[in-house]
Length: 177
Image (cartoon, rainbow, N blue to C red; front, side):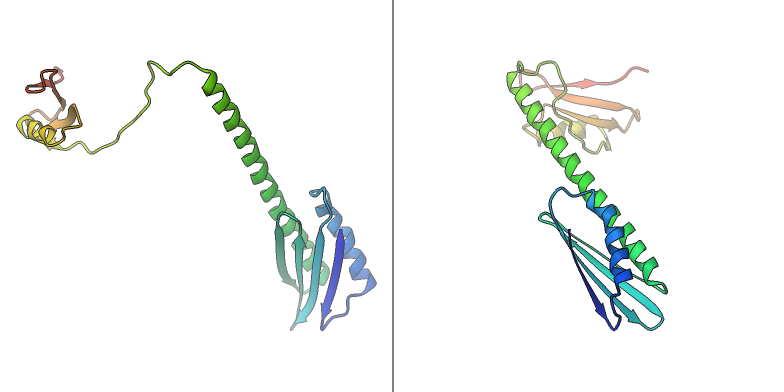
């Protein structure tokens, strides 16, 4: 861990440097490789502002807080950075896990027999109240479809009109109850 502390209108004392190093040990446990930390401390009015950048090979994390006490501002930054790092690590682990599962599923699917007797596709569309004759005309306008689901205006029940195998006539499915 390489730490660079810069003070703007505020001197970075040994006590502050030691405090920052001590607090950054909480973040060091998340990284295997070496990383850089740039800390800038400054004063604006009554507030002490601490800005921290953690730079790794994969990502950059940043936190800026202001508080009347510089040490409190540093603590808050460490909490923010730790949350960002944890969130990023969790996302990466989840993606890696999902990718490995997908690869296993693909390999497993290649070895499997073809899928039979399963629902493979779901189509959603609006069901509108129309008369059976209008449904027949609508089905004629859709040459690729073999059936049409609709609400019968006369009965208020869901019906299905379908093409018969002869391709010229139609059938109607209507519930009894």
